[in-house]
Length: 361
Picture (cartoon, helix red, strand yellow):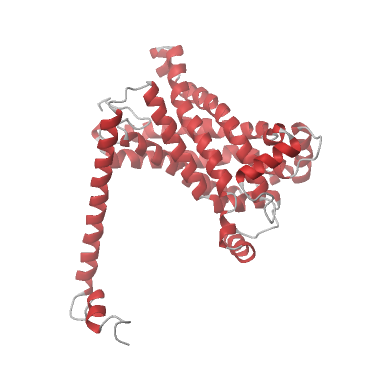
């Protein structure tokens, strides 16, 4: 029928012609993609300039500096953790019941078939709220405590014992960050490890737990959460700083002689490698957090529950789900540092780590 379908000429214009070399068409498409990419970069640079114009020069270690780091951390952790919810969902369920699924793809297929496609993202809401809050405290707190401990040590000792300062600063920041994260983590694990999910929403879950168990019910996993997250974050920040410094020392020019693209690429690479180390160090505690939130008996202390669960699963059980967590945490940590340092560049701040203006010999 006329008007319902495009004419032959119109359709021909939409696809490579037989008389037109396919390579030329592909090259033209590639050029268009580059033009769009360049346009996106120009728009990002314009937006960055506008933001910097409104905020003014952000002085290092000023309240405005820490506010920017808090916002950068919120974006870095909230977005990335939410994006990997499907991986986290399978990891948590396999930690609680190793026989539930044979592998990730089989798990997602089963979940999609029995719970719908939305089921693959079960737990995204408490993940987003919890890890946004955690990221704000983690990154903003790390910048604060790193400067605080460096000032306490003095310039000479701060340089000499920089790794110890990275470790102390990240541990202090994570201690506070986990207090913000714990209620959301408790709800997330309960939602993800019960089929169908125990609660219909994040805040409905929080209010239900408080009504039934008191505020303590939201914090029954705080000790194992500290046990998982503090070593994880210490490894994450200290190894990131060390790896990034090593990369810049290997490169022929100093950090500030490289453009934004190279600096953010270094941030991603350093973050990914640091993430692999983080996953291994923190995995046993991660398994225990999942078990405690899903399988803690009434009136049982954290120590009693941990001892009982360990007797059930043994040392080998503490490593359930490690391969998938390595992939998840490596990607997650690399993207977090990429987002965080990109945001710092966006507001006119230097990226994290490296030697800055220090010239190569």
